Image (cartoon, rainbow, N blue to C red):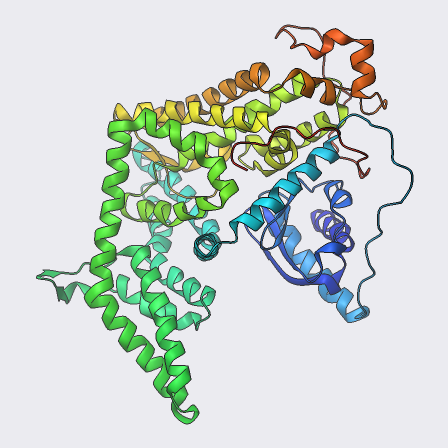
Length: 544
């Protein structure tokens, strides 16, 4: 039954992205189906967003369909199978997408969720064009190296948490050593996986990247003395593995260019491992070890001495960093902290940005009581937002509205300051893995205090982010003109201007206790209706 459901969702998506002939690559991450497309114009965005199970779409270097954690891992194989079947059965090019129906200019009408989604897509496209700089393209490559490791980090992190709980309670002493081995095995060899992925991403032979990186974790490396001190297994960690594998790629390229083909299979792998390996042992391991140590020391100092302020800044600016593509630089930092300290204290603070989005969405839901289309979008996206999947709320609600995106960031800043303040008091909350956020982060919490206190501090941060995001959006997230344009009964076809004439007092901010219940029941996403003439655009967020 579950397989039929996943296959049905894949079958609904495929024709809306132009069919199998338009799909060049298929991969997935934690929450998104990432597609390489031959012709972007064949995609029917609005119809795709209306498919039950699709939480939203994001256009970046690939076309990304947000399906949520768990679901995407099950739908992707079904989608790949359908692509292969369609190519085998009908290799002809896919038909062009049905264009919008031409006709007379429609009458002005209230802003719908579809129009907000289109506005969000436009903002995303503008940011994508601005973000195509060498630095940001490099950071995207770094993210491509670490993102495939996230499922293992999550699985091992949860096992580590369970093992810690059993150990503290004194339960199952015969099982805890085995759980400890399961939790630690991947982290002990993570440098090898980073080296493999790095060589693959930069165009080298993946196994050679892994071979060079394995030197870092080899126990016998402790017999080597560099700069007057012995190296230790794992010194330099993922940063050393990253540098070693990049060096191996360039050495391999040089060999492919100059080594005769007759001896290439013997000479190139040998020279690649020898040269990059010696540079790693006698240089990169020491330098990367110093950098990794500095990252840990710097993070500890930042949270211990400026915790509340640092939390406010990190929690408030994380979503703008995501919009600019700079958040990818944090992934190696998180991984380095997990490798050296057992957890990253930065992730719970950054997760507060999602809490601000949830509070903001609740305020939008209450303020725009007559906009049934947008309220349906919020209802369908809210469960995912609470679990830390924020894209549907960001790109479908807050970002295209403008002001609410800023007030959501204020909520994230408040939640980050709350957790940061406890770090200043010596109660550090961290995560044993990267990827999850929101309520999904609870099983991965770790730190220097008891699990109960860690849960209380992180939960308090979430509540703070919810509350401040709600209040900031409710009272400061809308101008009178925005309320006039947005707060109308879309399903009944009532325009903002007509409603303003009929009920001029509705444009003024409503009191928190004003009557009015939720809109029509239903959890379906936005309909496939194409938007008409949109009203004046909402103010753009500060980050755009």
